[in-house]
Image (cartoon, rainbow, N blue to C red):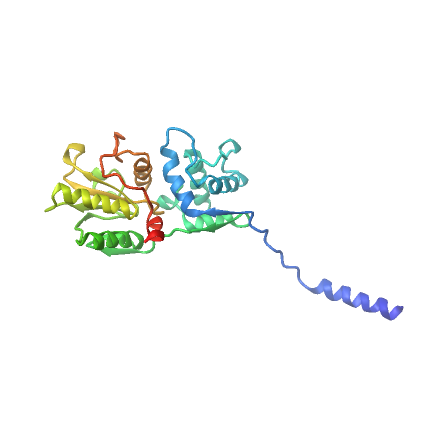
Length: 274
């Protein structure tokens, strides 16, 4: 009996000597990043609090995580990524050390993964890629891929008048080019019919795009294009995407969309079907 008890005591001592490694809590749900980012662009521009189709469940998980960190009041945890949620997410980004456009309230991959630790997993992650020089201006890899796809299908190369990441470069742009995903395309030598065809193709690969005219503002004729769901976008560009989805022209007057009508898609939507 003494030997048996002694053996048990040795086992107990050995077990006590083994360090206990805490196991992180299992994630309670799945967040579709594509849906959340689209909602963050659309919902703040809506006249109501209707959630973006297909995004409500993912947005709810994000909002619950923000509430758990005391960044969002419970009354705003509703699946609608409105201005209060944008502000709360921006506060979360700042808490991680981000600033400027990296703390605009539009979810980025790293901040969303950090928010989800122990709460949710992230699927369909988005990234704009590295900044590159393309046609003489700065864009990111995602925007370049979108532009080259449109060029190939149209059988023509674009002349870019202005690229992305260009804060203060053109005061008439009202900040839309401060971040990523935005370009202005020259229409020199293009007929109106060709300009419309270019806008249509840009929309079909995932841009919010319009033909701009001097009658609309202090600028010359050009095509303005914003890559939907680019996570480097400035807030002004985000608003243009939201207005595009709402059938508006992306200008300060929020007039009706004057461009060709297409099924609105993101670059990721386009890639899945082509």
